[in-house]
Image (cartoon, rainbow, N blue to C red; front, side):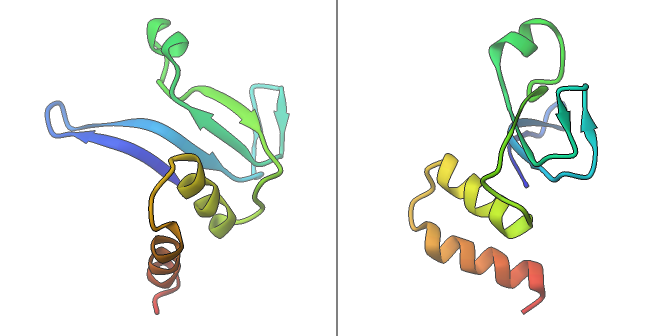
Length: 93
């Protein structure tokens, strides 16, 4: 799950939050665990990807749990309705 802002010029998405699964190692400090990437000023100043910072989490185990965390972390209003709509879309209902 990714929350980003799209800029038509230069056709770029600035990634604010990114929720990854446990299918890969992450620079040696996160080993096959779910993790959350956040945009930070530190990585932007270092000319790295804005969302390079990552922290492991046990708050979700699947894509729907990641979506719930994203909705909660981003403080979306009416999150129950949004969650149900996205689940229906992802499941093809």
